[in-house]
Length: 547
Image 1 (cartoon, rainbow, N blue to C red):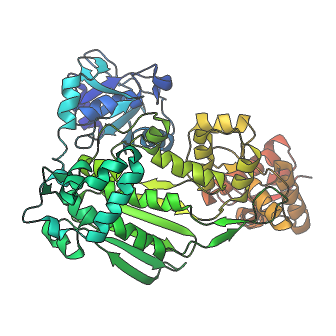
Image 2: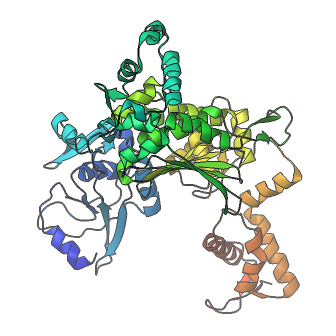
C-alpha cells in the first residue's frame, strides 16, 4: 500500500471492514486477557467475522483525518505470532511513513473460514457502528449453517446390507456391547438391520456413507465415489526416501487394526540419568496411535477427494494427515475447553464412531494424547492446519534432554506450561508474557526471542558443552578474547574480529544477531572501557589496543 491509497481510506467512514485508530504510543495486542475488546485480537475477530478488513494505526479519528504517527506494535513478528496462536489466522502487517516520517501501521485482516465464527476469549464478536459486540444467536447460527450438509449422513444409493463386511459387522457388535454394557442382553436379540439402526450406522434401514466407510466391503468403496475411502501407510527412512507403503480401504473399523500392526512400535531406551527416567518404554502409546488415526477418519473432509496418510519415519516420529479444516480453531482451545466440540464436519460419522467405542465426544481424546506424551517426557503432538489439511506429528523419543528433565523434576507443571516448553524445544515462538512467566520459574534461559530450556541436572561432558553453546559466555569473556587477539596481532579488521567470535557466540543467535552483538562489544570496548581504538574508518575499521 502507498500513502496515496492510505489517504483514500482516510476519507472513508469507518465500517465493518475498516477501523482507524490514533494509538500514538501503544495499542493492546491480546486485549488484556479479554478485558479490552478494542485490541488487535478484538478487531481481528470482529472484522474477520464480517468478511475481513483493515485496522489502521497512526491516524486521527475525526474528520478531516490526519496522519499523527504511531510507535505502537514495534515487533510485527510477535503480533502475527500471537494472533495466529489465538485464532489460527495469518494476518499481514504493512508499515508506511509519510513525508514527515510519521509512521502508520496497516493490519490486513482476512475473512473467517466458511462456517466457523472467530472468537475473542470464547466470545464471537461482530462490528455494530463503532462498537465490538457479542454476536447474536441468529447471526452465529447463520454462519454455522454455511458448512456443507453432512456427507456422512447421506444415503449411499444402490448400497444394500450385502455390501457390508460380515467380520466388520461382528466386530462392530462387540465394540457396541463394550460401549453399552447395559444393552448387552438386548443386543443378542437384535438382527443386523436392527443393530445397524441402533448404532446409528444406517438411517431407517438404508445404508449411509458412514456404514460403507466403517463396515463396507473393500469393493463397496466404489459406491461412495468420488469420495476416497483409503488410508495409506508409508514408511520413510531418515533421509525422507520411501522404503515401503500399503493402502487400506473399507471397512475402516478393521483397517485401523491392520494399519496399526504395520507400525514398528520399538522400545525406546532413555539415556541413563540415575533414577530420573524409566529404563525403556514403547515409542508410541497404542491409544495415541489409534486416537490420531480415528480423528483423521472422523474429521476428514471427504468432499475434497483425498486420502488419509500415516507416515512412519525411521527418525522416530509418526505423521497423520487428513483433508479439511480444524473446526475448534486451535489446539489451545481444545486443551482449555471442558466441554465437547460444538460442531463437526461429519456429525453422523462421529456419532457412529462413538457408539462403536472408536472415539469420544467429551473433548478428552486430544488432551489424553498430550498427557500420555507428557508422562513419557516426550514432545507433545505438533499440529499443522495449513493447505486445507490437518497434520499431527507424534514423536517417539526425547528430542531435548533438558525438556525431559524439566518434566521429570517439576511434576506440578500445568499442561499449558508444558505446551510452552514444548514450543521452545521445537524452536517455535512464544509470547514475551509467556516467556516472562517461565523465566520467573527458572524454567528457561536466553534473551527473547532466542530462548532455550534451562539445564536441570548436570549431565555428561557432551551435554554440558551443548548447554554452553546455547547459553554462551558473559560479555567480559568475549571482550577478553578481543583484547588478547589485538595484543597478539597488533591490530585487526572487522572481518578478523568476526572470524574470531562467530563460532563461539551463543548457538541460538542468528548470523545477523551475532554480528550485532560483536558491534556492541566493540562499541563498549572503544567507548565505555576505552581499551581499544579504531585507527581506520567507519566503513573499513582497523582495531588496535589503545595504549
